[in-house]
Amino acid sequence: MTIQIAAEPYAWPFDGTIVPERTALICIDWQTDFCGPGGYVDAMGYDLSLTRAGIEPTRKVLEVVRSIPGMHVVHTREGHKPDLSDCPPNKLWRSRRIGAGIGDSGPCGRILIRGEAGWDIIPELYPIADEPIIDKPSKGAFSTTDIDLVLRNRGITHLIFTGITTDVCVHTIMREANDLGYECLLLKDCTGATDYGNYKAAVHMITMQGGVFGAVADSAAALEALALLVQVRA
Amino acid sequence: MADRITVDSRPYPWPWHGAFDPSRLALLVAVDGERGLPDEATDACLVTVTRAVRDIGVTIVELPDVTGRTVLPHALVDLSVTRPHFSGFTGTDLDSVLRRRMVTDLLIVGFPFELGADCTMRQANDRGYECLVITDCCTGMSPDTLSGAIASIQMSGGIFGAVADSGAILELLRRRRSPARPTTTRTRSRQ
Image (cartoon, rainbow over the protein chains, first blue to last red):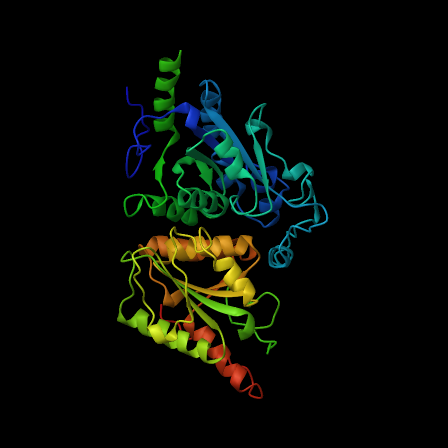
């Protein structure tokens, strides 16, 4: 039986049925700093409802994925060392210039610093045992972390993306993964950006020219396919 | 030689450190086969800017993909790095090539921008390179995706760097040549 997710511009994955053992749900930067009151995005004055919109759909997908034997979940988390030694000077300068300086004190502790309250993943989507967390000092993950090693160790070749923000960290990581041959799918209602127009453009871009970075689906289509997987594995 | 002058760019004057320095600058031109080749006007704009910055010592790097399709006249290209993937940093020696030349700041254009150029810019930014996209020297896969890509760069104080049009670059070069004259900001926008 071929189980695929109805996606644009092709049924995902390209190579046939979903194999749980080689597939990971990847949850990108679901941190208070990016979607919670008092965090980094809030400090810049952006509308948190945009980055929060994907929380509940993601929670539903995460719950089902966790019930499928063999299927993986990986999380990423952006932040810097307390001494800022891993923060590029231009990144630091830009963040300070707009009043949300990395390492500055805020309502949720120091902005984007490892170990601080605002830096951690929100309770609704918090990792459980056996779900690797990739800590990254960057928007992407493949140049600056051990994410590729972790995925290879587990034989993961297919990635289903949720997370924030669509046009920044999610897009950067999806582009990197695609370049390295991972087969990628973005769940478009499990993500959001600091601007709705930028979110729309980022989603649309993926589907162009035959699917330049992979494919796009909504969580309803994913849940339909995952439900079949649950039945087949029962 | 470093000059304490910056490009009239958005969302901040580029480069961040305040010194436009050709000796630490490279222009990266990413071409993704036939996916987004420039029309005559965009091509002319690109050649004008390339010539102008090359004349003051900026290193010109063309980044074709495996189709080998190029856009710049051969005589204007200092280095060519073929990309097996979209990002100029994946599976290439681009990073060490730039480091050897002590390049830290990058002017970026793409054909189309959203593919190789955007992937390259993101990985460059993650490595601490200071990036500026020259907007009217790029093509897009579509008007809305190009406009979205350019808008995204400017969010959060310039999350990947800054953007400017060719007029702003050429205007900076004029200011550089005639520092005694009062600064007049005349950006010639092609949009």
